[in-house]
Image (tube, rainbow, N blue to C red):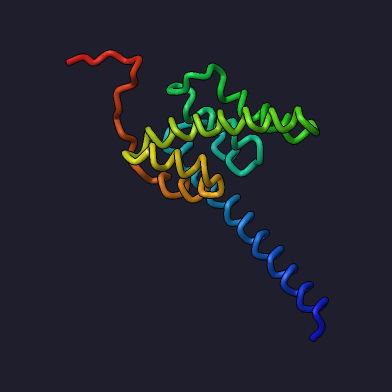
Length: 154
């Protein structure tokens, strides 16, 4: 076998593995978000299967806990804008959306896991873990936590 054929085979194998990982990530994210939306009685949980619209669903899941107003609209619009624009503007929008995404995931993980800080840090460093974390917490019971803005009543 010549070198070109070998390298071509390796390249095709890598592309197929990346494609399989992308499909797996998409499916795990959709199942996780749809299950969480159904458990929170949100309308249109099927939006989890539509790219960009799934960011709206994530925003709806955390909008009551988020410090960002209209997070349910900012996430999908920002994601779409990052896809549409080019150059420096797209990079800046992508960074802003990523920060908002991490903030939203922090609130979501805080609602469902005692290890929310670890999940958020791992998610911020290794973004490819988000689908696995969403899938993992989909059937967790919500944790009642005291928000810093809430008053404790006895």
